[in-house]
Every structure is written in C-alpha cells, then in structure tokens.
Length: 178
Image (cartoon, rainbow, N blue to C red; front, top):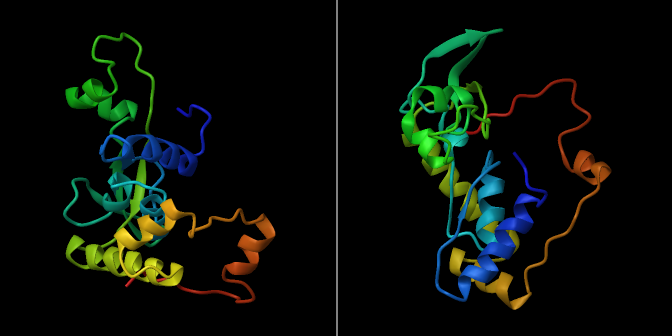
C-alpha cells in the first residue's frame, strides 16, 4: 500500500529530519539486492529491513519446493493476508487486530533458494564494501559524511541507460551471487 513517496526520497527525508534528534532510521520496503542496501545507507538509513532478501536462506522458515527445475521456498510477507490470518503479531504490527476486514500490506509467494545465511551474509557485506568503494567512500561513516556534505550525488538513469548498463548481447547467461 503506497502513500505516494518513492522509497529513496522517503528514506532521505525521514533520515534528514531524524538526524536532528539523533534518532536512527530503518529503511523498510523493497530491499531486494545488495545495491538497495548500499543506496539506503547512503541516503541516511541506519539499517535496513531484509525480510524478503533473507527469506530464501536455508535458515529462514518455510518449505522448499521445485518449479521448472528451480528450487524455491514459500514466502509470506509480514503484511500479507496469510500472515495476518495466521499470526497475531502481524495484525499488531499493522494495527489491524480488531479490524473485521484486513487490508494486505505485503504479499505471499515464492522466492529462489539463496543457500545458507553463512554464505549469503558475507556476500552482502562484501557487496556493501564494493558499493562504497565504487562511490569513493572507505567506510559507511565516510559514505554518510559524503551524503550530508553534498559530495555524494544521485542521478536518475533513463530506461535506455539502465538497459545499456546491464547485460546485453549474450544469447544466454548465468548470474550467480557467490
């Protein structure tokens, strides 16, 4: 359920305000790649929620199954109707415990197997480090300083630029995380 503010702008604006009071900010919603984590931290988030990102790990709850030769795991977002119907804490989080009609604020579905968290977390850490390196920051605190000083700039990329910057010209390819 969107409220009309792009995620990056929302994180930046809330972090900008919260910083005045020393309040940490959690970026929540849409974090699906290590690049999203790096961007959220660069925009002022203190940390990020990674529910769907970590849901495919073997340590996360859920049943594995195969579909078209791909190992998947059932995923139920905390704001989904499935979660709210089965779990009181989901209802509490979305203030809907007394509502007769529940409104979905998440989804249920399936997610690709990501293996063990013991391999996936080091991949995420290395990805954040590489993201900072690409930007020219030696640490997250330096990244944050660059953002607040105006040294760090974000640019909007056109669809054509995103396409050209991606994988192209190959008949097929395999993308492995680690």
